[in-house]
Length: 500
Image (tube, rainbow, N blue to C red; front, top):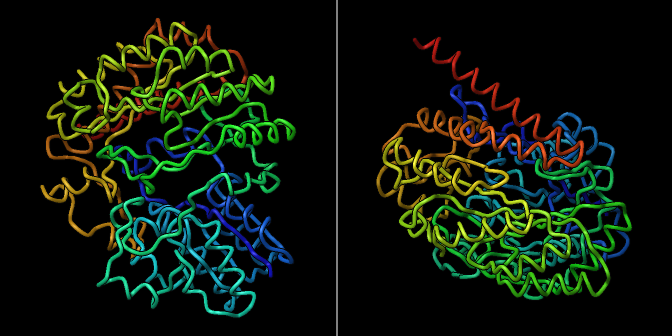
């Protein structure tokens, strides 16, 4: 059979970071372009565990491919089976893609996977464009589905695979799996030993120029060393709550394979890389055992950092860490369930600065405990006092399956059932909700832009950042970021003039 896995275009994606006109202020690709590793793992598993199939993969986001160009590609492939990966915010484009496949090839089996069916399994199964959905991790489930389709056999016995009809048995008989988000009340596909999954075969994406806005080269490989996150931050909708770690041996094998393909920079995109300080040290031990010193960075938490682990990581090539700081008070951190303190955050950023490790502080404004502009300014004061190398400041987004969203529904800030309605009938006019109990969205947008300018347009910061710039890629990234901030500042002024 001819099997195609697709990460579809997203021109109709839900607006998450609006500007004053309701358009996207900070597009998703403003922070970089990263491969859809989940779908790549599925096709790599399928490649290793089946024979006789022709496999195709298309990342429309990474390649900048439109729906029209994707239609031409689908016509060329003539697929028998299509798997489409998804996020809820891109559901309209996901459905358009599936609809086009069915229009071109009515007998093609179309399966929906990714984050969306985990978050909304019952709603996903009702979408007419799909013959089946995968709830959970798709490697084994999708491969078994393909085997059944090849033999023209039934497939609803496969754990994690559902149709519109087969999922109904669980509507009144929920099965709670605490390894997943609370809305997962059906038997979900789950892989205990993630070392059993083959590494991503990057031949499918070798010509796609992925890069991070905070990177140093155009030869960036994105790697996962683990799956899941056990923490319960009130604003986060990470779908799998159990943590499974790959062996350091397996991870460094993948790094060596990437080096052989010409990749020179490695970005760990784990939901949580540093589950413990010991994990960092163990990974560095394996790098050193093979006499490798590579440029790498990761996303992590300050409460699992020690100075000793940072010293070790720096010696093994660590360039940068992105920390979820989120806010600047101990009260706020406690409400968000961040399991840390402002003192620990300050200490960690001081260590990074002392050791020459670049630091990124991810920050959120517009939170329930920020009741006025002064509260926001005080929290940004803390960010500026941390003096990280980069700050990424977003407005709180109320995602479903989070405590923050449930609290917002209880207070009437967002209507109950809005995401469920959207999941059954995705439309372009839907917008992610924000906590506007104390300040409206327009005020929060202005404060976000002001916070960016306060952080990046400091003389000492500009001077230090310029001196640390080492590559042309870094220079262009910083230049384009500055231009965007200047442009949005001018647009805000023009908008205010028009309103006056």
